[in-house]
Length: 392
Image (cartoon, rainbow, N blue to C red; front, side, top):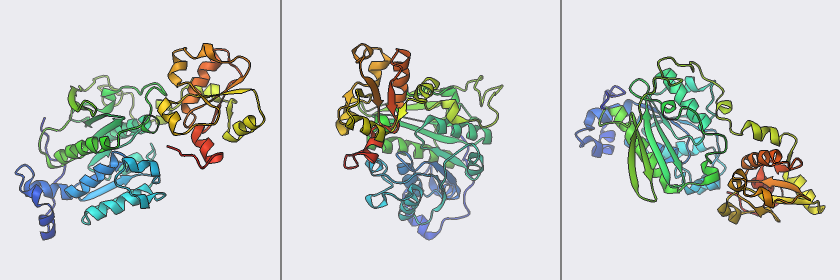
């Protein structure tokens, strides 16, 4: 469905701006009026990572007058495979500052506002209220639900995107004209069910594919052109090079935008999404050791069996000496339990400690009461014990 323009046009374009945006101006559907609306628009990007990188760069190039950036992280070397707004020289810098420099390098006429803080329930409304449109580039469920609920409560449209390995999704959520994110996904998946990009990986260029779709939708909404992805979910399979669409209908029973909403104020989204299940939290309580403790056990020839519950491709990157690889799913399916030694203490680890905590709950329920897991996982091991090894 076509929607009216989201913002009013600016008073004028300067001569320099006319030169810069001439290829937009000669498109009849954009023209002078559409470009003036882009100039007058205020767009917030949540995150300056995989999706935020191409989104910010193309929004800046398109001439969006004010760009806000919510980002609290620093640039890490592992970001550079996909987060193209940052460079080698930016490693260790604030992502927000790095992104701002790149945006102004692309278009000095853009006003960049930085929010160098974690987006949370106590600041999201104040930040969102300053902008016409939100572009969501987050990579975790807690922040996605926070963004959605705040947007619904403030009646703000937002462009959503998601990436994982070779798959991408995108849509426009605006409760006044269609469904919200909760209409599509009423509840988050169980903890540990869907790996993050940090755990499962993502093809770097997929970020550009989905991020460019997000910017296209943002421009359409701001200028009031075309048919936005309201009520439609775009699904992209990069391996098969296929795009398909799924209709998303507004759910009358939606907890936040339905006829009788039960979510009328922002909630504790970490608790709602349960980063780690209650069973895993209970299992890990009192059964978590540090990498240094594990090193002491190894050096002291303690009777232990170290088990790595990551995936084979992760194991190839880096591993703890003596660790045996048994992926998490082997435990969840019950296939690995019968082969575990009974005369040694089981020590589990994964990348950071989330997956190993889930497996620890399985082991304890199966009778391996003295099992433990390594808090911080192999990343903690490398940082504390073998810093010469790579991390990912």
